[in-house]
Length: 410
Figure 1 (tube, rainbow, N blue to C red):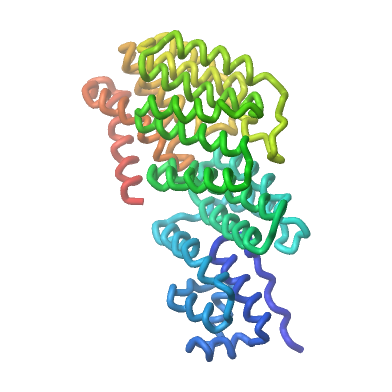
Figure 2 (cartoon, helix red, strand yellow):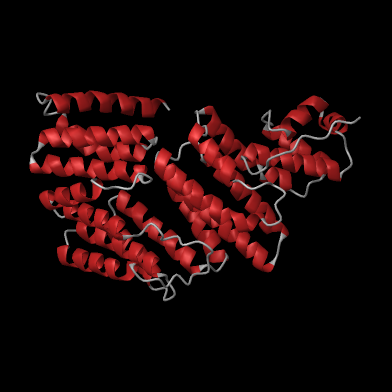
């Protein structure tokens, strides 16, 4: 009796997605693995291993498969994602055990009748998971989803193609969050892709949300003028849900604080609080992208603004209140805010508390693989190098040096 072909899982990664596409085209052409292997001058066993995602195909082999199967460009279009995923694998990108268990729960069966409908739930679950355990290892899943969405979009028209474009934009924005932890250039590139897809899909809320993220990236580069301009451009969209509008006002508040404009900063924060409470979701998306913009989120950014405005005592007091009851699922953000709190204590001259909070932030950064949090800790580390007579400071400096070396090696 012939053995039933192994069930493939194209949603798991770009490698699995390519294997599924290869099998689909091979069977469409009525070829066995051995027959296809003869056409491309490899063994049938190797073809089988590629289909089952057990072997990486070289770029030459992908092109040979494409030519032999006359796959209308579908196979070679997957090559960039394959190569990107292979590079990530080579440098140690792996799903953590916790992430794998989450993925098994949220990823639907590949034969589900409407994969598009489930994308938004997958993305929301992954984002929540990433904030708790870190984003490292989730990149391959996001790359695979973008590849699937692109394939569906190319084969579809009208509403289904629009939904595929929205899915690509959402996953590209998620990838920007992942790369923001370690690669600013790639993060910016993914946001540009997300913006292009959102505009092409005529999805104004999503396009405005991506502009908000680009404004946030401008702040990371200490470019408040561009941050304000990007946020203002998005705020001109009259159909924005309240919480998306609040996120844009927060970006403007941060930019004003960076520029020393206390009054404009306060006005933006107050307005963010007022509009975030509205329930006028009313967007073209099946998910609420601004769900995380609650009073705690706004208050944390208000504390950061106070720090930027040269009010470290007020910033430290507000951070302490917030972090005392910080949600467990926001561990990536907690690492950032404890880093900011350590900077606030440096500026108030409280070296012991600065070192203690820096150590807490460093532990969270390590647990969530956030090199972004490591970058936020750098001002504290520089200051504490001058305070090694304080035991807590000396201990942190040593641990921070080891953590940064390990991050560089990865």
